[in-house]
Length: 99
Image (cartoon, rainbow, N blue to C red):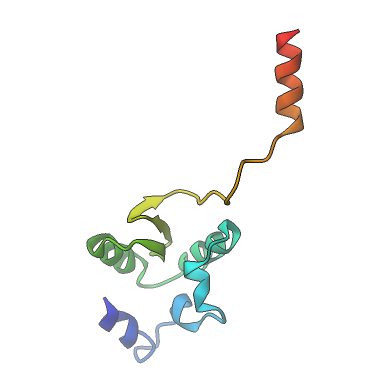
């Protein structure tokens, strides 16, 4: 896989992970940054090969082939750190249901 990624620019292929201003975006902590990286992977010509290679290597984290890996498992979305926000509308409806 590394050979494919290294050879892509020589073959005229534009890989977002290689031409991005911030390559750390693919290993960011913030969920919004990871979503940006996933979006950039959408037009990558080697997306399928990248994903297959990451699965085969059991990549521990990062965005590979347009998917987020966390602890070696593909996840749909990364949750931000900390407790979830309390939603006022959910709390209000729960109080209304209890009354």
